[in-house]
Every structure is written in C-alpha cells, then in structure tokens.
Amino acid sequence: MNYFEYYKQQATSTDLSDTERVGRYAQQQQDETYIFDDILNKLPALSRNGSLIIDIGCGCSAPVKRLIANAEHYQQQLVLVDSEEMLARLPEQDNIEKEACQFPNTSLIEKYQGKADVVIVYSVFHCVYLQSDFISFVDSLVQLLAPGGNLLLADLPNATKKKRFLSSEQGQKFHQQWSGNSDIPEVNWNKFEAGSLDDSLILMLMLRYRQMGFETYLLPQKSNLPFSNTREDLLVKKW
Ligand SMILES: C[S@@+](CC[C@H](N)C(=O)[O-])C[C@H]1O[C@@H](n2cnc3c(N)ncnc32)[C@H](O)[C@@H]1O
Image (cartoon, rainbow, N blue to C red; front, side):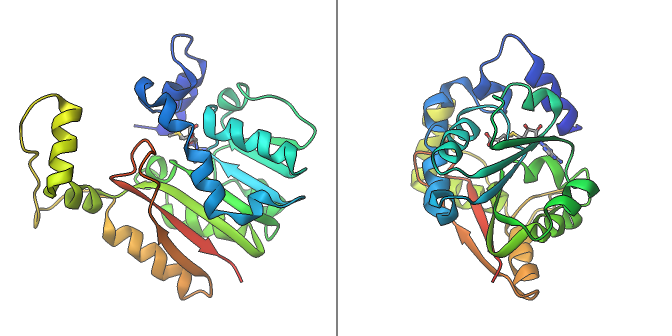
C-alpha cells in the first residue's frame, strides 16, 4: 500500500472524523487528545518562546491542533509537512508555514537544514520504512536539527514489544477485553517475519545516530495513549 496516497484519500473523505482520517479508531478520539501532553513532556523546546518546530506527517487531528495552539501561545514558527489534502484541513496562521510534500524533499531539507529546534514525526515511520529508503528518511530528519535540537521519531509500532506484552498476563487480559473473546493470543518467537518493524530495527537506529555524535533514547508512552502497550518513541538529540 502507498500510505501517502492512502492518507490523501482519508483527508478528503466526508464521512470520517479527523481521528479516523489519521488512521486511529473512532473510539480512540479521547485517548488521542493525550498525545500532545506526552510529546510536551519529552520536548522542552515546545515550551520555549520562538522555537522553530517542524511536524512531518502532521495529519489533521487533535495532536497537531494542540501543537498549533501551543505554537501560537509561545510565538513559535511552525512548519507543517503533509499532503496538500491533509494540510487543507488545518487553519492558516501567520506563524504557520504549510509545506505540501512527501518527505524527504530536497528543497524542504535545503530550506531548514540545521535550523529546527524540534522535529516531530509522530506515527509516520511505519508508513515509510517498507516503501522507501528509511535510512535516508531518518538521515534527512536529523539533518534538519539545529545545535541542541531534538527529533522525536514517535509512535513506533514495535512487533517485539507487542509479543512481550501479549505474552504477559496483563497483555492477555487486554487482548481478551479488546477482542471480546476469551482466546489467549498466539505469540510466535523464532519465526521468520518479513518486513517486521521490531527491536532490531529500532535499536539499529539508536546505535546509528549515537555513533554519529547524537544522543539517542528510547522512551515509553504514557499508558493513556492510543497504542501505548505496543509502541514507543525514539528521541534523537543533537549537541
Ligand atoms: C498515521 S497518520 C499520523 C498523523 C499525525 N502525525 C498524528 O499522529 O496524529 C500519518 C500521516 O503521515 C503522512 N505521511 C505519510 N508518509 C509521509 C511522508 N513521507 N512525508 C510526509 N507525510 C507523510 C500521512 O499523509 C498522514 O497524514
């Protein structure tokens, strides 16, 4: 599936809520409102006046709407990157620059290289890693950072984390409540899984940027977030 094209259609669909347009379930509308607070705790520059913030794959629902309100409060410059269709659902404001393109995009990188205090890429990496060169995707993201800047490559669905969760008593109870039946979920270890986004890929990214001089941290999500049991966030800090 070409996710970028898929989300263009979601953006123009008339019978979906904004929560559903960005790929979440309608019943996660409330949980989605907690995402921005979690991001705020992880990125101190979001609470500073005058920061330059780039949100790549910003979507059109609660998290980016909170980011827009926050940027107005702190007089921050906000660069929103997504398809034209998705960006059309967001307001026009003096402090907002809308960049309609699929990242990585050469002119966007040239324009903002070394300038961003914060780069947010929330729930986007899994759209990219199987259908384009994910190494140049993340390499291009870190190139946007100013000295002291932070990249949050967030909401990574980690298949190995999911297996650990579903192997636990807590995970099995959660699965039973979610599915509405009493089955114990099947968890397979030592099995070939083509295209798996898992510990190996996420830890590789952590190591990659560490040995290039960045600091990297793997952070949990607050438990009230839509997929917190199976997802986590990678923070990359530029000195
Ligand atoms: C799952 S949604 C997440 C939206 C938003 N970040 C959030 O968490 O609410 C993924 C978004 O990323 C956008 N997207 C996917 N691939 C992209 C790319 N290569 N460059 C820019 N945006 C992309 C899609 O159009 C979609 O709006």
